Picture: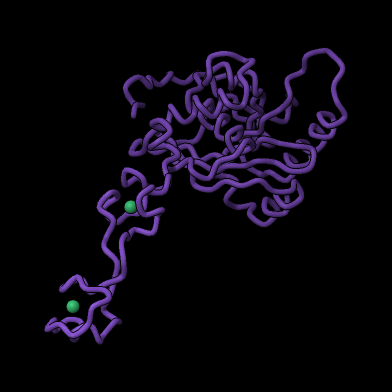
Amino acid sequence: MSDETTMHLKLKPGYWLCIDPGNVKSGWLTCIEDESVMGHLRVVRSGIDPNRTIRRAMAQQREMQKEVTLLMECPKPRGQPTSAEEMETLVEIGRTMQMWRGPWSYIFRQEAKNGIVGFAQAKDKHVSQALKDRFGGEAIAVGGKRCKKCSGTKVVGKTRCPRCLLGTKTNNDCEHCDGGKDKSVYEKETCLECEGSGWHEGRGPGPLHDMSAHKWAALLLGCWWQDSEQVPVHDVAGKQPVKKKRKRKTRTGNVGA
Ligand SMILES: [Zn+2]
Ligand SMILES: [Zn+2]
């Protein structure tokens, strides 16, 4: 850490930009602490974009950065040879950090995995599973499975008059469809299986519906940060680093399907 940084308590309510950096593209996710939602963290936006696109966006949004803490995953120094890709990623991290004008912190993925999944060697599938569990389980967190009966169309059966229930026969005395002549009133039946929602068990897409590998990694940073006891937030330009502690949150009972 350079002596141009300080440490202080994180801003409340927390609004974070989490980045899983790559040498060319990076996964990112913005989230805000919100006690009213599952996992107490509301995912606002997420994406996977070229690093230069992310830096351009940062350059255009300088003011808001003071309100947001940047959580940047960073390779952990481990005293052994590393790949060209990892070296490039480190350079890219530096370039991106230079565009940031607000508070920020590095997060080591191993530590985040250890905190959220329980072991530092956790694979991607373990990470996504742990995060789904944290946000209420697959059905709630991801949701968005289409109703099998209507394939998500919300309706079933043949197109017919909803009053006389005749679709093909004409010449009856129904006023609604004018004896079958006015086919503009014809419609299909609402799917009872999903009660017309088109979604399996009536559950539309959950907050983590649109996730992928890099976004999961970014969310991991946010969740770890949310739970962190010690909060090393850096500020560009300031006094000498001072470590402060923050009370650890109890999460028990907050999560469950
Ligand atoms: Zn249905
Ligand atoms: Zn009719």
